Amino acid sequence: MNGNSFLHSYLNVFLLTALCLITLSGCQAASDNLINQSEQGDSLSNEDRSSADSSNEEKGKTFTAEIIKVIDGDTVKIKMANGNEETVRLLLIDTPETVHPSKPVQPFGPEASKFAKELMPAGSEVEVETGIGERDKYGRLLAYFYVDGKMVNKLLLEKGLARVAYVYAPNTKYLDELENIQKQAQQDEIGIWSIENYTTSKGFDDSKSKEASVEKPTGSCSNPQIKGNINSKGNKIYHIPTGQYYEITKPEEMFCTEKDAQDAGFRKSQS
Image (cartoon, rainbow, N blue to C red; front, top):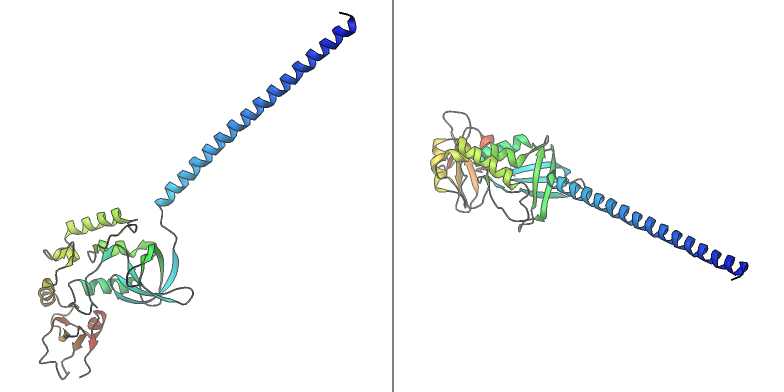
């Protein structure tokens, strides 16, 4: 082999070796880059999961609305920011009736209504967190209300003025906490839990209504004179002592003042 041939072969081997080294270096860099991207992806995924987990524990998105009227303890009429009016049913609770067309005023219904009115007077603002599948079969919004950062649904349970009820998935976000609050009210025997066998899993026992209304007149006076009566059509009417039908009216509830009667959902007799 002459010198030129040897030099030519040597150069070929050198170039081939250099090319292999460059190729291997590039492959290693690409591999390292893929590993780094994978690790970053895993890290982002963990952060995303952590964020999602924490959001489940927080209060959901809310909006501010104006109170038009408290209908009873668990039903409120509001005005939205766009001017639309909505009737709202508070989620996961049930208060005794005061305005039901075919039921008498139930024990602690007036108290629940009064508490809600004092907490949310007409013209005040309330924070609203709607449920999932926002409306019930009557077209009412389903929601949790907040006043000064406190959930109204919880406050009614704490006072013994409501029971946990109408539990339907997926609107069970605060169910465990609400049930714990109810258990405490039961143990303390306050409000609706102070009347034996009054509150049941199906609602409130109407047979206790007349008993309670005689024992606990609405208001603070010792001798209430205003008679509240529910006629055959379910209309709630109150009669004052100077009224035409006062003497012949058999009361289903007695009131100290006309305001007490009106707060309980009764209207004044026209005679």
